[in-house]
Image (cartoon, rainbow, N blue to C red):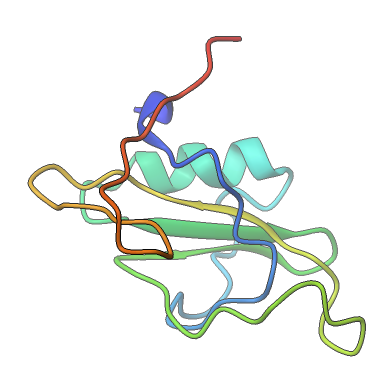
Length: 101
């Protein structure tokens, strides 16, 4: 479901998402998110205009998007995984709250 996504974007390019998903979710970030949501084992997605949609079970090695030398920003989120505990950068428990539109 699209209401289970971490609202904090992963703007820097992340690795581990595999090849671009041709014909799936390439038109917009929303379409990419929906394509990922349609797969139970999808845990993260990223989309970039001109490149398309990437998703997989997990992503890693995300590049800091504030560095102007790196890639154009991506749009993407991590999917909330049931049974997994989440912590912030200081190691404190983190609770996902999705804002209502």
